Amino acid sequence: MEDAHVLQLPGSKFEDLYLCFCGVSECEPCHSFGPAVRPNYILHYILSGKGIYQVGERKYKLKEGQGFLIEPEAVTFYQADAKEPWTYLWIGFAGTHAERFLQDLGLNSNQHIFQSGYKEELQRIVLRMLENNTFSQTHQFHLQSLLYGFFAVLMRDAQTEAVSEEARDSVYVKKAVNFIQNNYFREIGVSEIAEHVCVSRSYLYKIFIKNLQVSPKGFLTRLRLVRARELLEITELSVEGVAMSCGYQDVLVFSKAFKQKMGMPPSHYRRMQRGERNGF
Image 1 (cartoon, helix red, strand yellow):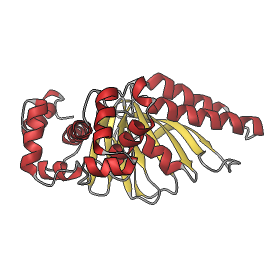
Image 2 (tube, one colour):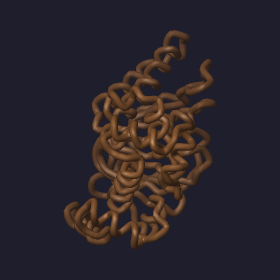
Image 3 (cartoon, helix red, strand yellow):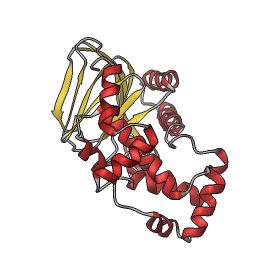
Image 4 (tube, one colour):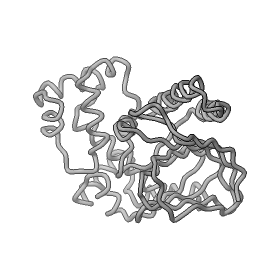
């Protein structure tokens, strides 16, 4: 069972991105949904408590401040924790550019999990959405502005380890960062990134050092290891599976890079994190 406040919308006059439904739910212990498929994109954000989310073979253990993406027609399952059941908010949306907006957040079929430190703002936006329930034209425009506001809040956390304001002024850096965020799980290299951005390798290196104080290869490695750390913490994937999911074809190369960054092997890091969280 769950105590839910929900807004369902009959349609939209907008096309590129529009709200389909939204809500806030306080779940009872072990309350679950699925396995099921949904026709729209849905973002869930956890306000308190914890639970699990499973999509395909991947199972994530999530807590307050984290969220998950449900893609259209993907088989998913999620369940509240038995001792600390979660309360979460959600927005369902669609549109011709919905996938592109999600990619701007670094979310796609290989990255379903996100984090945000702006809980109060996200909750306030959804509560305001729930108040606009008359479906008048005025409320439709207001809901649209709130939807863009929700994405704007999530965008603050989208750039790994904070890309500077100066970097955001560089179209090339933004395009390269976006490409890396959406392709880090493949065997991409600096040449492919430069080709996508339509600049030379040397120029790409120059603007990354100027704006981000790190090389393109260094940024790619850093992002891969940040994602690897997340997967080690919240999934049951093997170390080999984590390596493959983060663009490393050789688990030894991955383990060496991870140890250099974190000061310990991936398996040790996972054991330490699970111990600190008392079996989360």
